Length: 238
Image 1: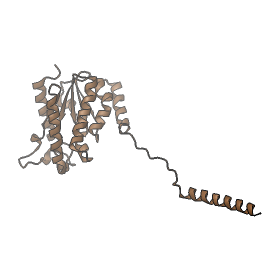
Image 2: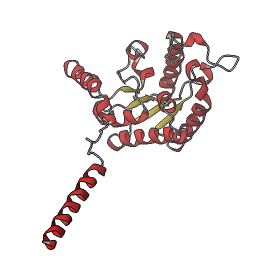
Image 3: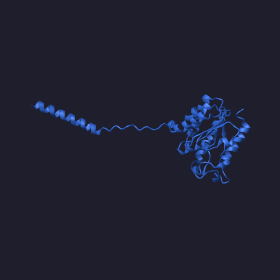
Image 4: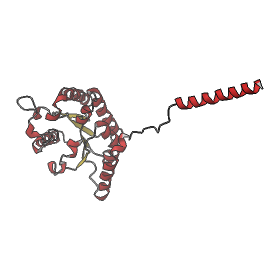
């Protein structure tokens, strides 16, 4: 009898222990998944490629790629007699251009790639060193498939809306300039910054649209003039 009561007591203690353990154990949660950066642009890139199917862009020309300053640039109007293709997508960073390069840049086998990014990168708290490293990675991806293609990188532009990160922009630009000097046969740093600063050392508002970030026709005029001058001097398509 005593043995039976003891056995029952033991069973009860075990059941209580199991119940306590289940109560204390954290509930299992479905792990949160983050959309890969490459997928973020899937819709835009797919639309771009679908347009190519209907109207194939020229190969062996000039491909412009990067963030919204590229996307909003009417390169066909600015360079009417040249085989130019716009491959910009707004809101992107250098790492995004790198991820998409083998889809929207290298298949066109350009002799010249004109690249702009950095605004969004620094605004997202990336360091100047990281921005420069991301640019180097973009170049590596392009040159892996097209080792002779020239890449011209436009300096990160000063703007009223992001004047607070101007010092970081200067630091990133300097690192990128040095990278270009180390591979001067293929890389070129296009310094548009001095022309985009007024006599007071600040970017004039007339170079920008209402948001004081994206450029007005006056801002693009500066870029067009510098690229035209370099195309005449360097003759990258010959």
